[in-house]
Image 1 (cartoon, one colour):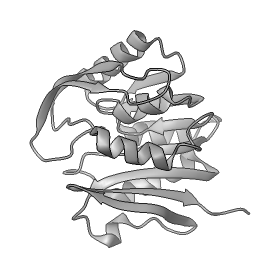
Image 2 (cartoon, rainbow, N blue to C red):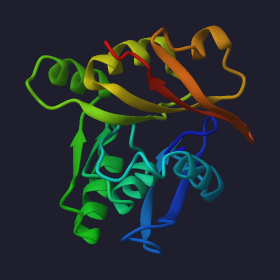
Image 3 (spheres, rainbow, N blue to C red):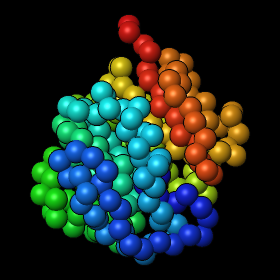
Length: 200
């Protein structure tokens, strides 16, 4: 995940971009309570699932954290990546990493996701083709996050979800017309790829 795999965890160091135009580049990760980058194994799994979906896509990294997911998508030729991060220190590092990579197709916004979602839904901005949902485990109502993100997405969009493997299924289920395409347990987390199957 891009952050907060375990409660009360702090991390510092770097994340390495696995593939694409920024392959091998290392990006700093600040010391922020609960911030823990997605590991290589999880990202390899995720982007194997998404290898035909990310190139040319408009992507949203809704809880960006270290930026591991969003910058990996940017490296793999997403058309654009919008990163949302509520923590000031983490957001500043994301902006610094964006400049370091000269990734002009990446935008970093320092604000709570709820505020972003409300403003975007009321705007004329083009909908996203896909979203990475990796919110803080301790304080997240996943059903509410699902409700907030759906108006931001294109009709055939995909959602990547990372949540605790112990999260009750009732909280982890997306409503119709969303269906789960992939579902896997990796360590302490459950990762899923879902898609909107509405073609009306």
